[in-house]
Length: 325
Image (cartoon, rainbow, N blue to C red; front, side):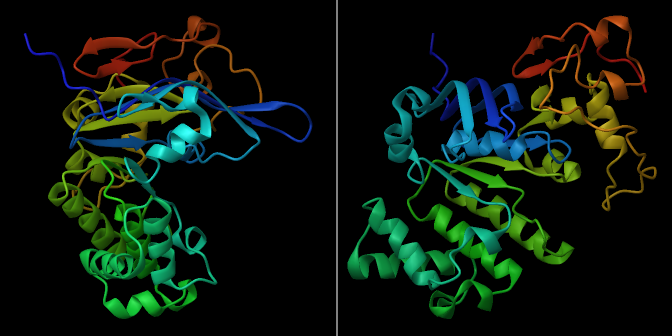
């Protein structure tokens, strides 16, 4: 019997806390799991502040000094949390690379584009000298930009061009997994569609696995192999696009889709999710979604729901799954 291939990323029970100035802690990510196989596309969705970006930064080992991380983060079989910064540095950009949210802040404003790309190549010993310069030229062409961009500074580029440069830098060291953290933030609809189409095409052509964090639910249902729904730092439901869209088990998943407009269909008007997520600098008793859930019962306010698995990556964390809204 052939064993299942080892995942490229296998993160289990990841927790992230931030130290607050008053001595308290904010529990931003609470027991999240992320598993990504070769050439797989995983979409992570949820409201702003639910921990999506923080989870990606934990995978990259790029959280600030005020953050504490627990759990297990394996990349290519290596336990990075156990190995510390040295282990993260060995895999960062080479195996696991990221396109940050908001390229205006991700790129250095006082260094030309060419130097930023060459610096990454030299730092990770991929290429140096003229070989690195030629590689930088190849990369900007790969993402659909003219070579003249290499001589530009950040402020001389449009938002779409900056995001393409960020993508070129992420691809510089030939990673196996690309993390895309809301890569269309602050872009207009047309440019955003072009950037997303580019990411989708390059991941296919370069045989990359993709983890896409986005608010665009219709997008992930069309382009991703699996979807994870996050709420208040926790993954509340996982499954294929067909599972998540046609048979959602968690009430938050159903309400999230009901609140999302799909410009590609003539569906009903979006419906607002009433209430607000809980404060994560305080203990969250029971189910975090309970105050906003239309089907909450007494148990929901006191007992934390544990993930229920249906096999093949299908799971949800709800005491009363499948209740119709």
